[in-house]
Length: 161
Length: 161
DNA sequence: GGCACGTTACTCGGATAACAACTGTCCGAGTCAAACCGG
DNA sequence: CCGGTTTGACTCGGACAGTTGTTATCCGAGTAACGTGCC
Image (cartoon, rainbow over all chains, first blue to last red; front, side, top):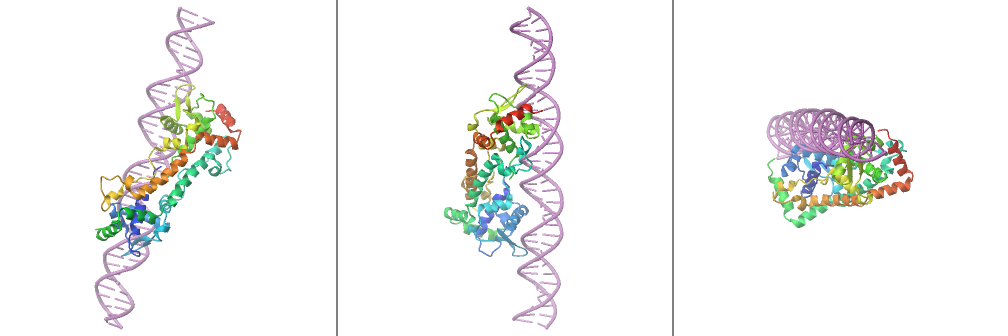
């Protein structure tokens, strides 16, 4: 049960985009170079964020990605879901239907006690992620390292893509 | 981020073992036949549970698996961890070390705000799983379907491996 | 000088390979039970 | 009849393939800016 590496990249990229002057797009190449990541693959993740409505993408010169809405309206769960997909980690295949008194027409994802238990944990996880926003993360970073926003803008400006 | 299928199998098998007369071992073949699962692969998962100290295994005739301790002392998290391993789903690779002011000697798994946020959610998930025991699950099933324990013992007895 | 147009370079986007992990299978080492043999 | 021994079958355990999902890469469609020429 490993989470996609792209989740970490996407979260960091979203936080970095928070600090850009609004209206200024950043290309996938620059976002990748920022952390020395593979450009094309990060682009793939950014596409997923764009499809999910978290980013907007612009083609051509001066194009790139920018946040589609205010950072306070983007939860960590939004980003995770955009990359990982909406389905939960635990897969109830309903093996009870093969057991004694098992029925094919029963949705064991809803009725199986074990499935319920796992779902409960999954909901707790999602709730925690939904309670955190990109804005809060950016704020916390700014408090601990006040020079960060400027440093990030500076790096993007001087990056040799 | 998909969880191993073996987690579902392992949980159901543990609950079924709860209902066996203590001291009576059940072979991997029977546990697998119960839900029409691939025997050898389930055996692999049961081995993991044995390594984790959740089950004890016995070789030879009349051998098989049995619970290593009381069901109330086996949490769902124990089973999940035995199959999936102890590491958390989100992998912080510490990409901040490649960014501006990044340091190689800093453990970003501890200091990165994003990593902390993901870890917080992971802990909530684990806490939820740790709060559920195999005994509680078995109890809930017994309350809803009182005939289950007897039915399970019966099926194991009559199973043509 | 201003505007329209063609060119050009740049960017995303999806289609395509390489790799790793999960899934599934097989056969051997060890073990326990039963059968057998001798006393 | 009883105990020790041998045999044999049974079970787990780890080593070995097949399949799916993740990681990485490449090239084309579209686009916006720029330069050019015309009015």
